[in-house]
Structure formats: C-alpha cells, structure tokens
Length: 185
Ligand SMILES: C[S@@+](CC[C@H](N)C(=O)[O-])C[C@H]1O[C@@H](n2cnc3c(N)ncnc32)[C@H](O)[C@@H]1O
Image (cartoon, rainbow, N blue to C red):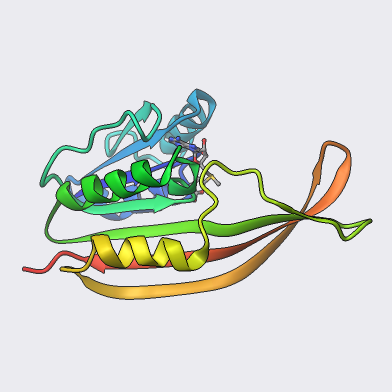
C-alpha cells in the first residue's frame, strides 16, 4: 500500500494511516511546505513507532511532482486551497489522478468561500487564503477532473472557527468540502 499525504502538517492523518499500513510493509509519503511541520511529523512518527513507514519531505505541493501510477491512496486535507491559482489546482488534481493506481482513491478536503467576520463590528471580509474558490466552482472542477471515476463522497458543511487575528477577534467562516473518488478498474 503506497499512500501520499499532501499538506500533511504534523501527521494528524499520516500517523494513523502509517499505523494501519505498517504491518503490510506499506509506505506513506508525507509532504508539507513548512519544515517545522515536517520536523514535528517526524517526532510524532517516532513517538508512535512508525518511522519505518513514513517518508517525509518539506516542499511546496506545487513543486512536488507525483509520479504516475504510484499511489493507492492520496489524501489532501486543507492543502489544495493553498495553491497559487485555479490552473495549478486543476493541474494538481490531474496529477493526483494520474499518480493513482487502478482501484485507488483520492480524498480531497478543503475550505471554500472563506470569509472573515469581525466579531465586534460584524464587518465581513473575503478570507485571506491563496485560492478562495466558491463551493460550486470547486465541485465543478472536481467533477470535471474525476468524471471517469466513481465519486463516493461529495459534501459540504459550513464551519466557523473563532480566532484572534492581529489583535481582533474574528470568525473564520468557510464551506468545508469533502470529495472522495475511486479510479475504476
Ligand atoms: C490546516 S493544516 C492541515 C494539516 C493536515 N493535513 C491535517 O489535516 O491535520 C494545512 C497544512 O498545509 C500546509 N501547506 C500550506 N500550503 C502548502 C503548500 N503550498 N504546499 C504544501 N503544504 C502546504 C501547511 O503548512 C499546513 O501544515
């Protein structure tokens, strides 16, 4: 079992996946832009006894070329909304697809329609995120790219996170989408 975790962070998904594939000599490739995240991921891998199962790299997802027909499962959780353009988003999806083996799965979770609401004034601003797609547009791209795969999950839920930003209390509001598709035999 070969797995790829794009934007893995400190391993919230990578570590449990590594634990479940370790016995079968599987490998999970974990990439993240931040060297500090990769450092913590490696510490967590050690703590949970999965260093032999994890291969990690600090790299921008845009520069990480996914080899064709390599991965059984690719997860991108809170990663693809950080690419620099819609064109890159589409290209990366195509690359993920081409990098997946027959019967393999791609799981994409991302924020769309991100807004920041000032808690004191109620003022609403467009969220500061690299790729702030409308929910409909994100689904349109995903459906187009994965048109010849089986789509098993496609859902969107609104989420709100209260946080402090530059001394202001804001609500980070977005539609959190989940899209899971499987390559047909
Ligand atoms: C909200 S965290 C999610 C981490 C992990 N996937 C999870 O679900 O816990 C988003 C991660 O994406 C990484 N990230 C942001 N832009 C990226 C990029 N261009 N290439 C690779 N990773 C990126 C961040 O460094 C961060 O660790």
